[in-house]
Length: 389
Image (cartoon, rainbow, N blue to C red; front, side, top):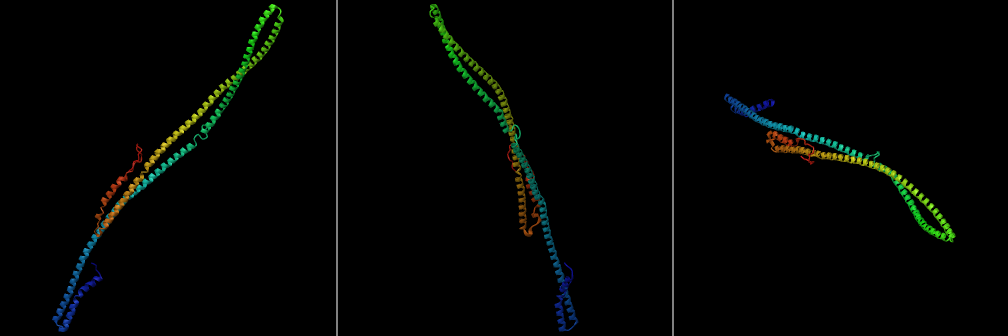
């Protein structure tokens, strides 16, 4: 109850207004009956009664106002306490949930950043390995003696002299064949001359018989002399021809022997050089093939490593599933919080702090968060299968 000039004026009005009709009626009564002691006393008593009734009404009014004000204050204090409790619980709910949701988001962000950095590093390593493979493929035997082109060129250069020598040996064989053909012709001539000598021998035998008979008769000696001279001339011619034929045959045999000796020497040298060149060529090819085999093995090993890295990257990409689950938990928690606030809002003035159930809500959020709070192991298992959450 407030005190002040307004309360004093109100109290004066409550005390004076009931007395005014009494004062007016007493004045009228005194005026009609005259100013007697009895009328004056009655008038004063009436005035006092009016003032007393006014003051009584005033104090009663004040008591009623005080009671109403007290009940209103208690009601308002209860409402304020209810609102304060609701506000405190709401603040506690928000202050409790906000760190959890913030932790969800922070874990998702850190996990995403960490996995992206890891993936970036792995892809960078794979790019580096691929670049090394490309450089190795481009520079395989580059500038070295055992480069494939150099090996082919060197092999051609080593085998070309062998081919030339083989051509010379082939030509020598043809020359020997020609000399042998000539020798065969000369042998035919010797065979013919042998026939002539055989015939000449028969003639000599017949001449000897004729000479014996003619000598016995002593008349045909001149005939025998002529036949003997003619036979001697024929034999001399045959001897000369035979000498020439023999000389030609000896020359042909000597030439053929010389060619055969040269051919044998050339063949021995050719075989030795060919063997050395072929051995060197095979050695070059073996080194080149061994180098390419080593490169193929290196490429295969690098390919296996890159395959393993790609499998690890595929497994590491599963982080998006965990991040999605965390963000889904955040979304569901926010939706549940919104529904809870809306449901409490529908209660109007009947809502209170107990409707929020902060501890239960926080416990529910923490239980949901535990399912995604642990970090997964990105190492692939022995079966090379992808394991999702």
